[in-house]
Image (cartoon, rainbow over all chains, first blue to last red; front, side, top):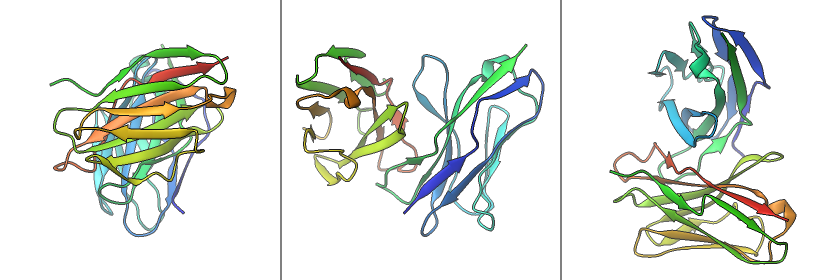
Amino acid sequence: GNSVTQMEGPVTLSEEAFLTINCTYTATGYPSLFWYVQYPGEGLQLLLKATKADDKGSNKGFEATYRKETTSFHLEKGSVQVSDSAVYFCALKRGSGDKLTFGTGTRLAVRP
Amino acid sequence: GAGVSQSPSNKVTEKGKDVELRCDPISGHTALYWYRQSLGQGLEFLIYFQGNSAPDKSGLPSDRFSAERTGGSVSTLTIQRTQQEDSAVYLCASSSARTTDTQYFGPGTRLTVL
């Protein structure tokens, strides 16, 4: 079946540090890949997505590239801010009408 | 327009009681999803609606769980004879026919079963 594996947290960084959160997936066919973010006390929000191999999703300084050869979709940001402190979820979706399959989430804490 | 809304935001109930959770999707969104977020299990899919029909109910954990959707809009998730392991945040999401890849989530209902 489909599954998503992401790195265990929590990840604690100082402001302006470089961020990588690893995500790998197992799926049949060609899924779409997503990063969702959950800020403290708020609901899940779509951060970025990529729908085919070699696509790069980007938003708010975050980037992730769909790598089919390594079945990965790692999230990166060059310089994190305190306001980026949140839980980040990697997810996949096989097609229209399909459910999202989520990773376990990675909590990021950014210190001033 | 308004986003996905859910009610109540918090629900505390006693073991054995029935509860109903409501989801109002974004207007015009034909697809609606229920998920559950709990400490032990992460984010799990429960059920998917396309219009008023549910082509995928594979995530419902037991026959105590049921859901319906009427008028292609509002959905209700019902849990009968609640158990402590049902305690979780229940999330609803919707997507449109035009942007089927993107699901928009509501704020969730936090259910606590005592």
